[in-house]
Image (cartoon, rainbow, N blue to C red):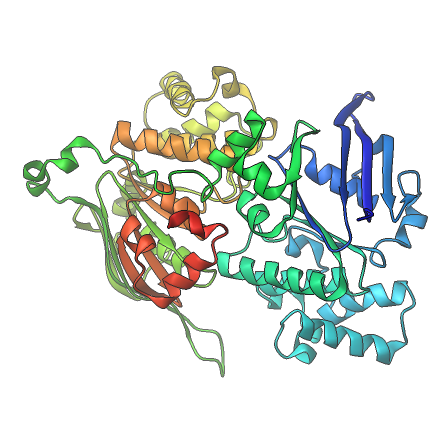
Length: 545
């Protein structure tokens, strides 16, 4: 079959702040046939997004194609200026970006933004455009299209916003859609619906899809062919089944091994500390690091609207030295529960017990002391680290806040923690912007350990990381748990990660826990229909069988 898109001998370089050029993509070549899905996979920095951006002519400032061809229907677009490329974007190549929040204009209604493509390419009058916009919103599965067209992005959920971006990408029925991590921030069930929608539109219009992703599960499930990139080069490509079942390159094998759900061992459970396996010792003390009993939290939504119960009689326990996960879709109540446990929110009813002590109503000095015993690691390590401080100062900050030691001893403690989270000593005097995402998350973990807490709450702490970086962070958490006897409360929407890291799990839906138990038992023999739906939505779920 004749290729629709042909990329050959592509080199891309960026001009640095010093004025010299640095090549980031080297001799990249692949093609996409009409109606075909080709996955472009690799870690952050592999060059996959830069390559996709070059196809669209949307390289960031300072970036340029040095050499090579980008042919669409046999016509080379590589030398085209922005004005000529505007005729292609939308009309022949659609684009679905990763982040719907930053990709939609917050001050313009959804319908106006969707109509822009029709106006730019002069496809109909005002009445025709409104009709097409409503048809598109209906086609991508949004209820009440007339209402959605009038709403602003902040009034829609993440899944709804992503559907709007898909509608925008296919509005003019393009020959090719470039989807750049289109579901990486979405829950598994929403992810499945979005990918199903893209498949439906592809079959209906014969549209080709270039799927840029770091999720090998998604590639395995959706792409006919896969192109693997590392350090700006294509290191392996071929039929997806061949690439994933019999990879030739060590890098590809590592990606597959590290990807949750694609490795040989679905349940890489950390080993509990020795004292937990000794019933006599465990019976002599409270064996639970954390107990949540009947937690309830209701929010008022204003006049004329029913109150929203974010947490409804939530109860679970975390055995000392183990990991308990709370999973569920956005809006299920898991983050509200985590914020109650960490005392950022006071529940309307129920109790939180830390080591057997009720900490629900602590105030003043008692609440401050609680902060030493429970630490939180956030999803976004860059936003949670002060960009003005050095790494050593960031890690030592909790010690300084609680008056622990002097400046010299705090520095020494920070250096020890840097070593403990397997970072080189020279990062101590760097700042967050000089570190990768994985390194920043290690710093966040080191800071959380500074006060030797009893419980660490990890709120989507690895969801923003590539699979290889994610795997190293999970291994670090397991190692620290084994060495220090740490207890973790692990909040996540990623069931494959939960299968890998946790001893026990609670599944939440609409503020309530619908199922709890040992992770392997719940995942292999789910008793609730909602749990089965979540598991069925995980890409390559057959690996669990």
